[in-house]
Image (cartoon, rainbow, N blue to C red; front, side, top):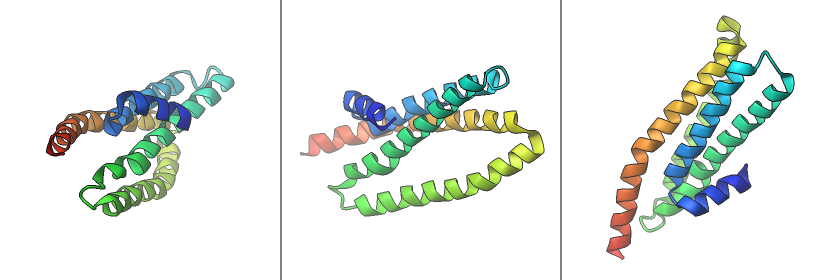
Length: 143
């Protein structure tokens, strides 16, 4: 997943746009997992691996690659810290939320919630990608 993420990133160079594409792929994997989880164990494993890989790719882009763009402003550490804090808070909360969701509504509802979260992530990245391109274009012109 890291190699594929790196290839996509090298092609598009906008980490937010790349994150949007990978969130969308994760959403597709989650919706397929939701739809076919009861029909094939091996397909479920493959789709779960794709979904996990997509989320690792998004994490790589947003937590590891995005902060470097703030070097000229001297805010790499701040941005990296905020993004890491959000990541770790989300990871900690998700352990409890996933357990509650699966207890209350079952595993399929939990997988569906992952798909919705991936769609929301893709939408947020889509909104931010335009602003990111405009900001990066402005910084390049200032050089």
